[in-house]
Amino acid sequence: GKTTGKVTDEKPEVDDQVVVELLLKEITELVIDQGLLSGKALKEDRVTNFVHPEKLKKLVDLSLGDSPLSHAEIFELCKRAVDYSVRTNHPKFLNQLYHGADPVGLAGAWLSEALNTNLYTYEVAPFFMMVEHEVLAHLRSFIGWEDGDGIFTPGGSLANMYGMVLARFNKFPEVKTKGMGNIGELVAFTSQEGHYSILKAAHWIGLGTDNLILVASDSSGRMIPAELENKIVKALEQKKVPYFVNATSGTTVFGAFDPLEPIAFICRKYDLWLHVDAAWGGGALVSQKHRSLMQGIEMVDSVAWNLHKMLGAPLQCSAFLTKHTNVFHRCNSASATYLFQTDKYYDMRYDTGDKSVQCGRKVDAFKLWLMWKARGNRGLEKLVDNAFECSKYFTRQLSQRPGFRLVIAEPSCTNVCFWYIPPKWRNSPESPEWWEKLSKVAPAIKKRMVEKGCLMVSYQPLVHKNMVNFFRLALHCQPPPTHEDMDFVLNEIEKLGRD
Ligand code: ABU
Image 1 (cartoon, rainbow, N blue to C red):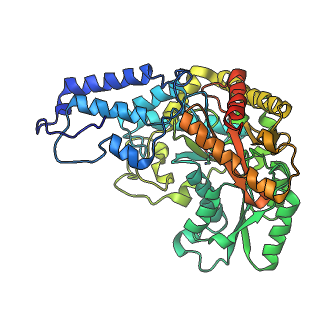
Image 2: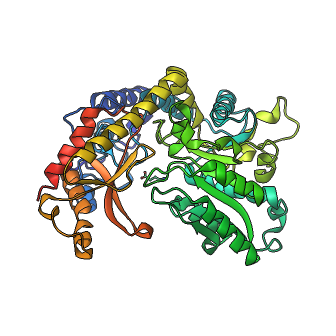
């Protein structure tokens, strides 16, 4: 029913210490009882309880008013938030490149939220600052860098933008003070499958989106190195100034891994900064079995890695990493004297806030550090290997079922892209009209799965590959997917798409 904002008392009840403690305990119990901890989702429960926006507005009083609510009313609102939120920790939430949160990571996130630490100076964040240094060094060690620099950023898009800005500063440090007026027309390169954040960054940092040059990819979605070189040569002939290449490890839709070694050699030849958007595929680095997908990663200049994706750290947990030790701080520093005084009483190398483009910065490293402590490299490796193994199982099962068709024959990462062809169309010629009809299938099945609440798998067309809507299943560490879950997905799509 609708929760109303009736007047109680002008002194907010939650200012009472006992009440606020009770509320925190109740919310903790709610999280546990509702199965919100990763891997503990109530199996019979729905992934989603979808209602349209206008109906949601009627079901819950979202308005903010003059009078304080009682503790009971506030807790009711928390329950409504759970009722109408998607259960991302449900084993059948396979819709996105993030999933449920690692429960130890969630505990860490709660603790750092409670401490409400702002990560700009060692003075106000001593413990978490040291943790961030340790985590960044550990992540760099998986890339193969003994030294380097980095920072946790608010999301992978910003981590990619850090790469573009650092690359520009490295080549043209004068841009920091003089702007871009005298350095020619900078151009950057990414593959057709690259994440849209690179396009957005091209606008934000003043290149202009026309100066992001898209490089063709092969049928599996990997950048074609020879095409990259052609585009660089063409840009040089047009008197443009190539400076930055983004390669992707784990593209958003196909999960393709661009071939880093040949791309790195081309970048060296033309003196270009090579950044890798490993937001999704970076998880492969912790696996001895799968890290070869990123062969050559140690040759690159910078990496964006979203630990909240495959590894299951709570959102957000995005690292920007670079092997360069001496440019990051110089590039971003503004030396605000009220925070970064030069005459402090401690070792100021740990005041890393000035490397960041933001001022206030949340603690994102601690939740990851805690879950890494709890699982160790080996525990995380097992979880990554399980996700890869389940995606291979899913691919095999799918290949054997009538009506399912893989979009790419051998998916490299833990995303699997496929079409579902309803029985009545299976023996018809695959004319343009047939494909047009097929384009409506994935959206129709998606609507049914969300209305039933049983499953969430995303779909998309890929216009530059001339592909109509297909499903993309994405597997992660948390909660660990099982073969049973994979069979469920195939059975359910068959049921929902029968007619
Ligand atoms: N940053 C790309 C995420 C897209 C997805 O979750 O599907």
